[in-house]
Image 1 (cartoon, rainbow, N blue to C red):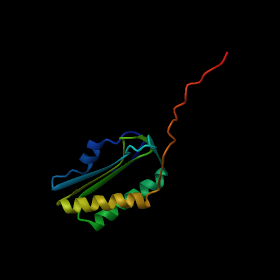
Image 2 (image 1 turned 45 degrees about the vertical axis):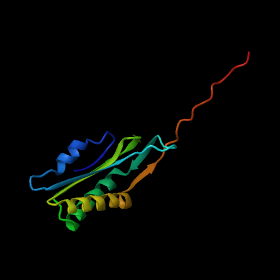
Image 3 (image 1 turned 90 degrees about the vertical axis):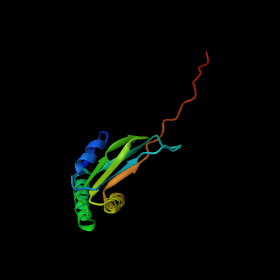
Image 4 (image 1 turned 180 degrees about the horizontal axis):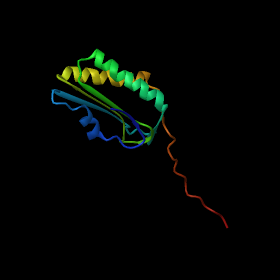
Length: 134
């Protein structure tokens, strides 16, 4: 499964997309927006046609590089609040080492080559109460 979505990532669906009876390992990585003092959310911009093409090629390269059975990658587009998942990479393999290695490699490649841009929207500043003189 390769998907770019504006909605929440359906984590059980991502896992189910790679489950197979011959898999002894299923690994899931979720990239989440973490809370920091200046961050309330992250905005993701994606050139979807190119990103889907690169993600598809990336999964094919993972299959050539590692003894895996299946791999899915789902990425969010738009604003993702703190605590929200921005990316999911799931991988199945007969043995855990291949699943972990392929998932780690794929996530590194997503960050390195997929045309996805991340920015921090400005936090809304709290305004001091206004007073009017009469």
